[in-house]
Length: 73
Image (cartoon, rainbow, N blue to C red; front, side):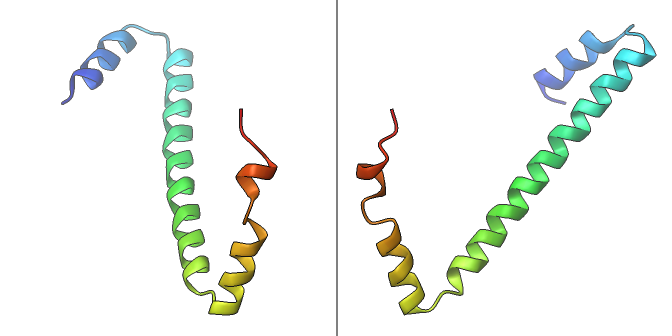
């Protein structure tokens, strides 16, 4: 068990049921968010790898000067 897990267990001892229920909901939310992020990354990778050369060229042209046109500050 990691140090963080131990701290979480210590901090949750003695909390009322409604608080433990909220913590459990948050844990489930975090897990679901992580799973969906991994799935969307896999999906995008598969989609991009299936592009043919003309589609890839078109996509690269679409974003050619993106950073210049839309600087992030």
